[in-house]
Image 1: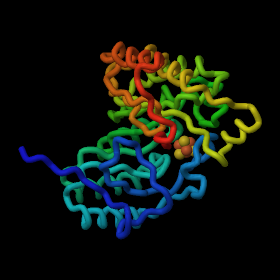
Image 2 (image 1 turned 30 degrees about the horizontal axis):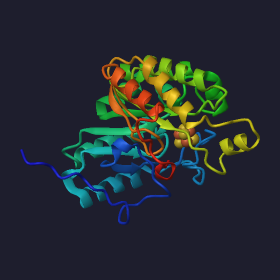
Image 3 (image 1 turned 60 degrees about the vertical axis):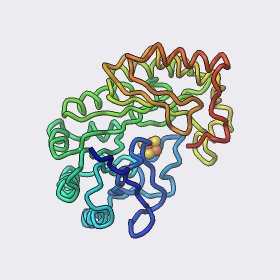
Image 4 (image 1 turned 180 degrees about the horizontal axis):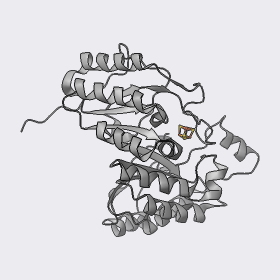
Length: 304
Ligand code: SF4
């Protein structure tokens, strides 16, 4: 079988994008359709991704034109579409269905359509609507609870609780969608570090995602989180404490079978494996890093 060349998307014109684009690492070779601009919530204290954007839904006509443009530029090579920006599941069902139908008509090799979603986006749709979207091809939701610890969720203004995330995951799974759940090391600060790690593991278990990722919090100047830090109301855990959080998170998470990664540039240690199958190996690697036997990613090479 001939090897298929990976799709390299060029995001410069003629592609039409507004502001900075963000997508999960695993969508690096996906076509990104920017069907919404910004994030409808835009309150999470640590996030500066869409602060310069006022949230709006792009017109359906524009989004469908973009898909035609992508087909004209990349032809049939597109096999994955990621719908941006920050919480694109918020799009009305009719809008989604038109996009999904056009994606399938234009890209014969299409095997996945995905988007970021907040728990509230999932819960605002009925189980029947979620099922309809899944049947039309929306197959993967990236949901970032960041923490399973309710006091931490409140402090970072996530807008949804531990229980909301469990229910959202149950509804998405019941509709046949896969979930990629993202947690944020350091989100609880030194104050909630242990509780954040333990409750995040408990939430990861309850959400039972197919994909699980841990990122590391970076306090970005100008965000509400930076102001909390300036006022002494938040202290980022040390690198050793962040690794200890990661260790607890891995040791106590018990999804059915999740692909786990810490390959995001924000992390000090790149790990991957399946949970729970590779748990002991991953924990042993973290222990080696804690003992100074494995080099960590230098600060200058870490990114957002
Ligand atoms: S929901 Fe996501 S994109 Fe929106 S403010 Fe929170 S972290 Fe940022």
